[in-house]
Image (tube, rainbow, N blue to C red):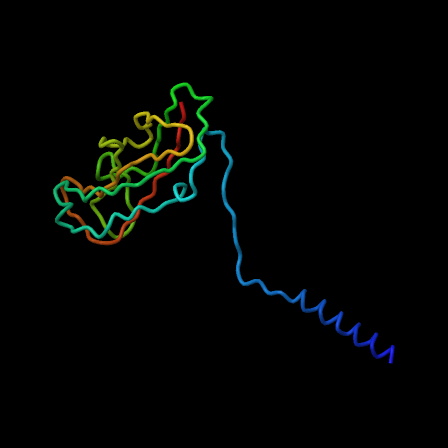
Length: 173
């Protein structure tokens, strides 16, 4: 009888061990980020974001017309400005410049005769040039910008899908 109990317990132990090892993965979680020496952290939603400019009527862009501006934000958190002199930040945007709309970011896709213009404080942003310094404070801060689609001054506007990419760099003073 003792032998049957030992065999049963051994069998149950082996089954329990094999059950715990037989886990299947249903998916993965990837964690991304970076560490930098800036005065503030950048909220994850601000690091990589999408600005939806909408479905724009072709006639609105003809002869240098533009779409309605859409706001987008870079949200900063955990700012410690103790090492800054001016307690300001500038933002420089870079990207492929449009060859047909001066000062605009170039687009890719089926749409043609357009570019993306960005603004800060109502003034056009010049690619590769820092924006006007913006005063920030300890804690959380929000930097606001605008973007719109600009049609070329002469030539046709071609309907279709488009996208554009810009990168930004923050400089603290």
